[in-house]
Image 1 (cartoon, rainbow, N blue to C red):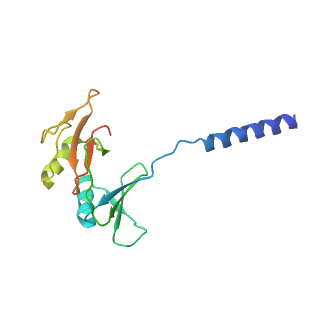
Image 2 (spheres, rainbow, N blue to C red):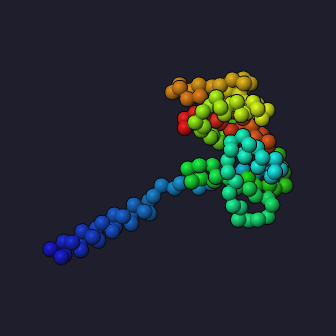
Image 3 (tube, rainbow, N blue to C red):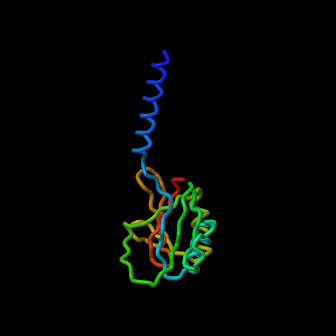
Amino acid sequence: MKKRIIVYLLTLGLIMTSQLSIAQAKITHIAVYVEDLKRSADFYSNVFQFEEIDEPFKDGLHAWFDIGNNISMHIIQAPWEPVTINKNNHICFSVPDMDNFIANLNKLGVEFEDWPGNKGQINIRPDGIKQIYVRDPDGYWIEINDEY
């Protein structure tokens, strides 16, 4: 009986170890290269209401934000070089209330558009999810949807 328990425990240990070694990778943060740290930090704070969190580098070139789901976004200022920006390459944030989010965009004077590029229009996916797209101060595309 003792031998069976030992074999069982060893087998269980091997199974658990093998599961850990093939665990799926997970996202921890997004880094965004920006030209002007203050301008971009203000944008992400005001438009998305992201909370700024402790920035470990303390060099004046980074700002970190809590963007939910235990994920952070780091904006990093560096000498600016033109970047090719295409709407297909975007990040997406989901909001609980698209109407309130759009009202805040309008209050802040931030333009939005649907996927084809129609200003002030909302795109509706085949599954009923509403989407809009905005550009941050450096021209990066951001999708906002209500798949919250």
